[in-house]
Image 1 (cartoon, rainbow, N blue to C red):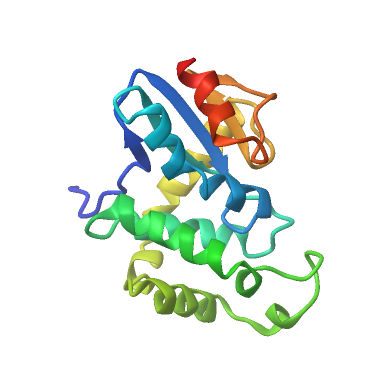
Image 2 (cartoon, rainbow, N blue to C red; image 1 turned 30 degrees about the vertical axis):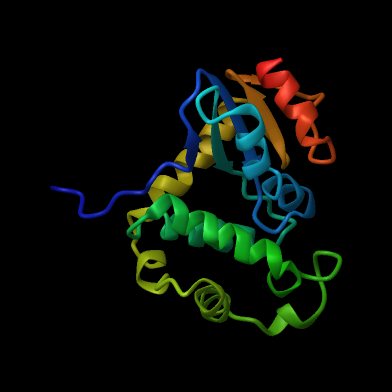
Length: 184
């Protein structure tokens, strides 16, 4: 059977140093890290580093699995990598519309999965519902989960450089500090 879709890898840059960021789309610390990636690529140089976003769903963010799947669904669309990034940025910019108050309360208690997808479609202009419904997308979602587990990743954001977890890198660090660790 021929696969009729492809999930684009969430990779920017093409340098020899590999910087992997494990993010949960609604986590405020992941959102802070996401906002620094363009500056990191500009400062360190796309020819010197490769930035890979890995998705790390976390159950205490109650729409986490759904929104993670929506990001991956976007990656199957034309210009998939950039479509996925636009979903991440839209969720980050409107985080309160995709999260519960104190992880258990608030207006999102009455929100359906279809409404969440429609909100993201509204912010991005992307047709996500059909891509989200592709049952084969499970394979991509499971890959991200398995990869994180294999590397001992349990929370977001977590960062790896060249395959090694970096416990001394955090989302609150300056971009310059990240760049120094990557390229000196």
